[in-house]
Amino acid sequence: MQKALRIDQKLSLLDIPSLEIIDDLAFKREDVVICCAGFEDRALSVLNSAISSGDKYFFLILISYLPFVQENRDEDIKKFCEDNNIKMHNIIYDRENPYSIGENILLKFRTPEMVQAPLNSRLKHPNNAENLR
Image (cartoon, rainbow, N blue to C red; front, side):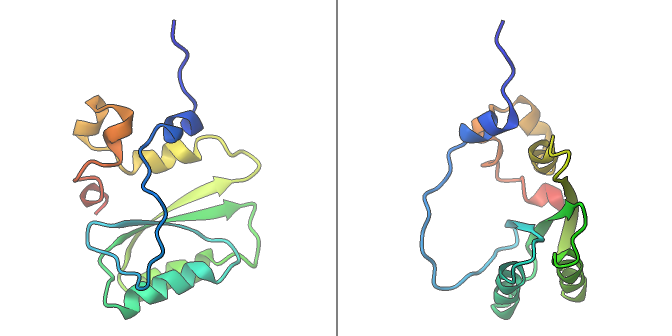
């Protein structure tokens, strides 16, 4: 009997592209941006960069942290998305009960075709971002 893989083991099987240095950040309509609402300014900087280049049709998955910490930027990011008509879905990551955060993110990418697809092809499905809208 084969043991079920944990989410970290499943994610380690995905074909992840290598890192590249980019000069200009631009998102396309089919892009999904996953943003952690920590205390750093970089999350809003990335979103501001995308908006300044005219891109605001991407979809944002915002990961907010529990327990609540005043310095975290989740309310700023939510307001930014609202002010700029960016479609967003908020997922809560509870640091004290961290189970299933990966599953919750992967569920946002689920399409009927993905149910039957092998795991390593799921995030490459051309309709994944469109199903978030």
